[in-house]
Image (cartoon, rainbow, N blue to C red; front, side):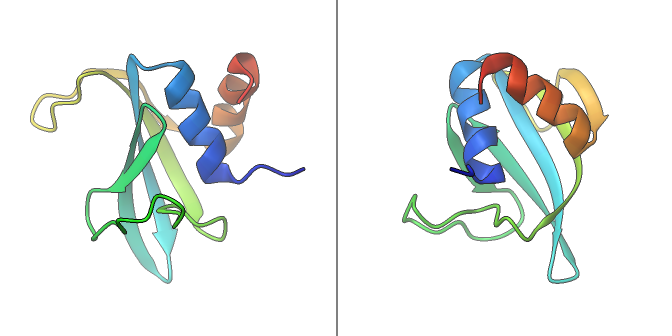
Length: 99
């Protein structure tokens, strides 16, 4: 069974609750910034559906980069753990935690 990118990233943050993932993606020729924390995703630039079964990060979205930020997330003074991770680099971390 293939697990969606969104679910894998949400699983990672559920297993690493001290981290927030900020995922910059491109969808339909527009960029979006998605925050993922403790197993939940929310767009920081668009409305997010109330239904948690509606993915904020669809599989067809192109991941531009992923930043790992220490929790709690303060948008005015983020404490970066790592910045600018590619999807390939993030997959290594996902595998390490079993997500």
